[in-house]
Length: 135
Ligand code: ZN
Image 1: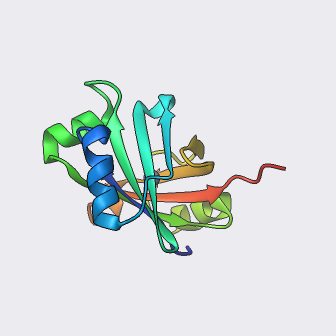
Image 2: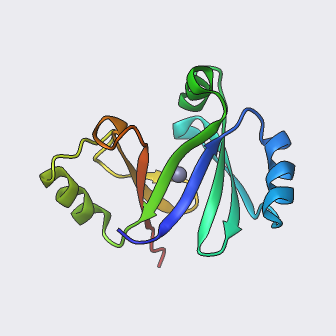
């Protein structure tokens, strides 16, 4: 795995959280994007080589809404950049790690993504992401 590509926080309201994080990080939100398949709206901030991603649920029963119900707002997942998602998935499966989705799907910010199951990663939700080449 390469650098931490982004760290993601679950928030109740992007319209409240975006100005707060703009103040906190001293940098403007450069993109918001709805990922309908995941029922989330996302907002991104650049922090050096990494990014901060905010996640707001689009529906009351979405995964982010359920997460906030259970744990409150806060850190949701950490994403590592990988060059070859398919081979990284194979490597981690061989090491015995469990996946939430081992078939990569399209996530926000032009990425192919998959999530490891927190049961096999000390309770931490870990995302792997590979930049999609658009040529
Ligand atoms: Zn993410």
